[in-house]
Figure (cartoon, one colour):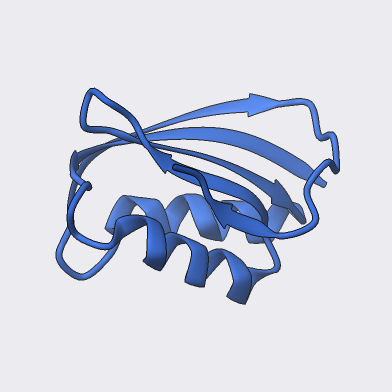
Length: 90
């Protein structure tokens, strides 16, 4: 099992990035959350099976249909198994 925190920059706010992230995470069985940051980036925490988390990171490089991802920063963290589902944080 794996946990990562990701920071996605580019045109990622106002383009349904969080909703598409939640949809993709649920498809892959990922738990965690996603939120907008005041500086225009999106932050997310993903927990799940190693291969599912890697697929989720790969998806973040592409993003939602109307987004334009410029950078994805990935920070590995200790797996905690603290989430019941995947949510959008406000």
